[in-house]
Amino acid sequence: MKSVMSSTEVNVPAAMAYRAFTNATSLREWLCDAATVEAHPRGRMYLWWRGDFYSSGHYLEVDKDRSLKFRWYSSADPAPTEVQVTFVENGGSTRVTLEHFIPDDPAWEEMAAGFKDEWESSLENLKSVLESGIDLRIANRPMVGFVPGDFTPDQATRLGVPVTEGVRLDGVVDGMGAQRAGLQKDDLIVGLNGVTITNDFSTFIQGLAGKKGGDPVEVVFYRGPEKKTITMELTRRPMLEVPFDAAELARQGRRKFDDALPALEGCFEGISDEAASARPEPGEWSALEVVAHIMHQQRFELLYLAELVNGEERVSDGFGDNLDSQVEATAETYPTVEAMLGEYRRTVDELLLFVEKLPAEFVANKGSFYRVGQFILQPDIHINTHLPQIKAAIEAARAAVR
Image (cartoon, rainbow, N blue to C red):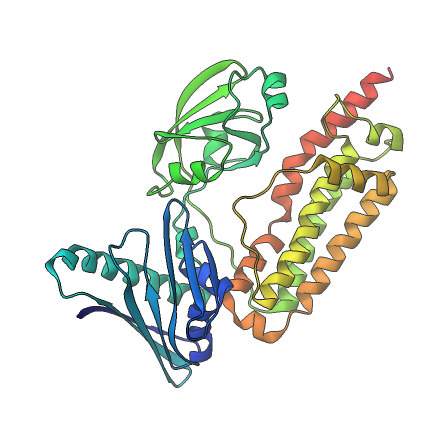
């Protein structure tokens, strides 16, 4: 038996470094895309990455805040192996040392090099997440700059698209790769960098694999019945500066919402409740239903924040589709402009107050807190994307009564 070893020094207490190997939410923040774990001897340890890679094993030894050992058996390995992790704290920082034991067999030589490279990269990300909150897998990931929408057979018929699989653009972001390349709302992307894009959004992620901001990629898409191919330059990802102070994050979030909400509310000035509730076409949302959809995002963030604080983030196999029945129920519950906009304001107030009251131990967990900052400090992106949709719905309602 021989081993490959990797090590890093992280400027956090040993308890926080230990948590990064024993809590499912923390593991997702630096190592994998989904996890389910029970950190005790014989407790499960299942890690999954987008694509077809996973590791299934269990904890063998657990010495809280000091060391642990787990069984590692990935989908690419010919046999199970073991990994030992030790945590040595010194003056507020912690030396994390990882040793991966493998058979002393020439057949494992190439795999040993692979383990070494992957653990080095992962521990570099562990250090970044624990010290700055920034996940390097995201920081180095390029941006396309669009809002994905659902895509149904009815939409394919309405748009005149001759296929039923792909990623439909619900809007594009000013100045980013999609807009600069000429992509538009309701374009349907069916190919990216040689990868066929289906209704499963993970295929789009696969098309970006190995790419960074500034790289060119080939995009194949339908605009109505016409199939087009363009080259798009991927956008470099700006990383937000998140204040690691709950009250300050709430204050900055308030300023962001205060900047974005007047434009949303301004769409309804002088608009009757009837016009705001009228659908432009059967199956399309009214202006009030669009606001309901926007509000659902903040309602989701309230639930998501509670999960992060509890360290029990849910694992899902996708992003989920918009539920027309949920949108309809919210619009019928708040059927007037005053009621809907008032409820949205109250939802925002509740979310920001929750942020302000976050416990200090959660704020110290920078990986999770940084993720909170990402959605608190960017509400304008979702709101601004839907402003043209709201205006179009209101204009259609006005035109119908002329």
